[in-house]
Image (cartoon, rainbow over all chains, first blue to last red; front, side, top):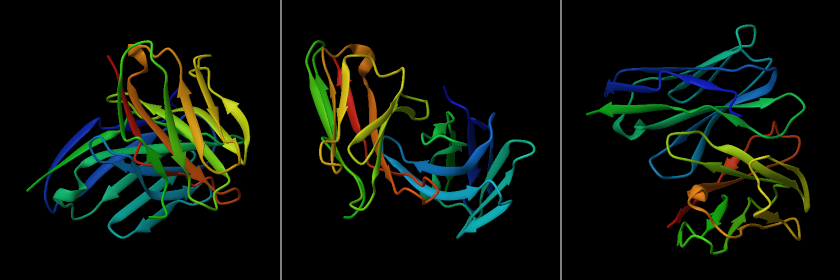
Length: 111
Length: 114
């Protein structure tokens, strides 16, 4: 079963704008990971945030985690056409090793 | 390339045939995972290994599916008597124990069962 749920399901923005997507989950976690997937390809690991962290940055990416609300957000700043992809959050539940993914947010960046 | 590799990248087969996929993890990673992804969905866990031991199997993994990791390095996933419902992307990932279970994925094998 898929624990995470991303919102929105799809997002269309202009190049240069910021894109924000959210992830909600149900059980306690060790960490939460965000991945990008270009059409028909494998998943690229973007960023991992531990349960005791609230915010993390990597380049143009900013991830927040609110364990009290069981939610996370991914912000992509100054988007580029190359950011067009599906983005997935994956939770690493406590005492487990398998990741649980949501259905993803499809982001389209228009030139 | 020192990432996770998978072979083949695409496989088209007829219903009832057997297929086998291979995954080569990042060399020092001792955990290896198989996931399945259907169109419009996120990956779903199938099974995982720590070294050569298969430690967990999902209920998604019917008795037609078998996975091995004989020497704790590469892994194979075999599907016997394929069905059209097996059509999906099969993804392999690897991670290192004690590194936050940060999983790195291969490019996937896309299976089409006709």
